[in-house]
Image 1 (cartoon, rainbow, N blue to C red):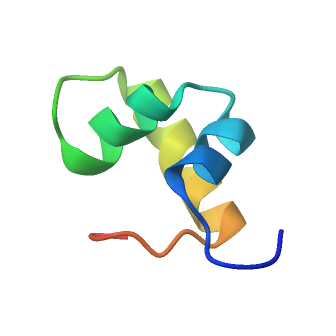
Image 2 (image 1 turned 90 degrees about the vertical axis):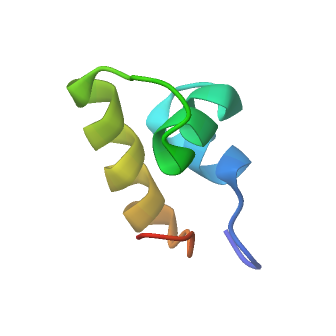
Length: 53
């Protein structure tokens, strides 16, 4: 995937919604530990350069 990575790229890789990625990466609401791990791994995998990663 060339170019700057977005939360949409992370969502596609993790198999979750963009809203779930937002909740995990911004701590907006509680999310299951398994989902959090999935999102963080997907973010690393696609090269997402978000805050706190």
